[in-house]
Length: 321
Image 1 (cartoon, one colour):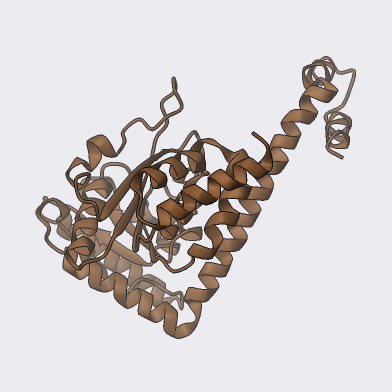
Image 2 (spheres, helix red, strand yellow):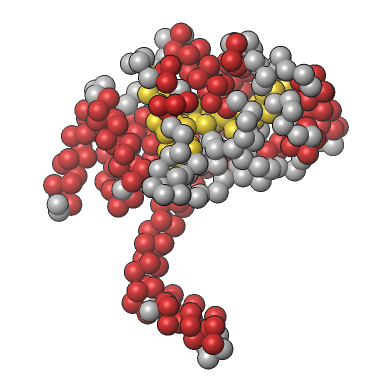
């Protein structure tokens, strides 16, 4: 298929998705996840229809109830009459590379609502809790009129915080019994969280977790650093605290808009997307260069001591031009 024919196909599918065709949305999301070579044409067709959706990230360690909280938030926004898009980034199958869990299992109760679109993306080994295709998937859902867009990351540790580059508001979820509360947030996710949430607040130890987090916030404020305003208490499985979380997200967004930070974050998000696309193109060119210079032979020479790594790298880079 030549470029002109492909552009026509993309344009038609985007028009159908903007008009509410869920099958068109699903196909575009498949391209976003599985066909990086189609991203340029896809991005060009989507661009006039994007840029207005609110993006909310939910992140945190494994087992804190991110999926339950995401589903509860989706129901709350839907009850308010909004069309909700959900991107759930799952661990990858080591066999197929696909998502191990998926919306069919985790959010089955949402699947029958035409005002909610749930898509699982496989992380495919990408660190930071997000799949490389997440930004493209969000653009598809934005163009299709879904707003807000909820992004649930895979379980992350202290330093894996790519979600902050994509979301207008990042919610960090923690739960009692998931380890030392201070250790869970030291030097990592606490710095990027806009809203702190303790889920499973009905379980033993919840009060201690809230107290630990509150003390951490107080220390940060005393040291002159910015910090989220308090801790949201949540029992997502029972729907308790969801209204408070929705209100806190709305208040955060109003604050961003009033200070100009919302525009700043969106420009930074666009810059990150440009960077990611450029790196993807460079990786594709690098793969072609490896075949051209016979990387295996170069590696054998370096391993044998007959060539040095820097000279071998220079030969590989020369093949890129």
